[in-house]
Length: 148
Image 1 (cartoon, rainbow, N blue to C red):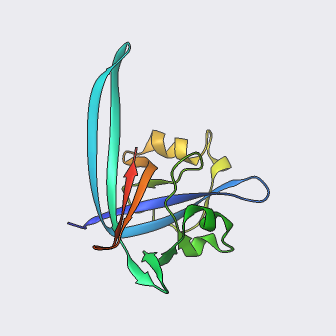
Image 2 (cartoon, helix red, strand yellow):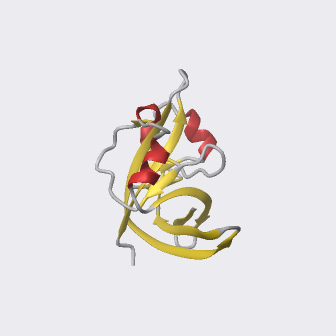
């Protein structure tokens, strides 16, 4: 069941105003995708959604995902070494995930892509989802990340 791989990109604003995306490749994930099409004004509108079930283990009293400690988004944004941690944030400063192995751990500079890295990923790949909601479950330890 947990045979998928995703890469989560965490968004961080640097002190000099640049946006960097920090990737974390996570194996052993279960992803379900949903597609719904409906009428919207003058034509068809599509709505894609994915749920990623991401198992974690406890390490030093905190959840650990793919060898990185999980931090809530506000703590992650202030961490001295953000590449050592992972978070899942929705909202205005959202993170996103792709249903593939990114093959690199280097941060990606947003400004290197016309329109930004997220827009580039949306236009060049399938399976790109902005984090919309996050739930953490303890009985069977996993995060459930909903992406749109």
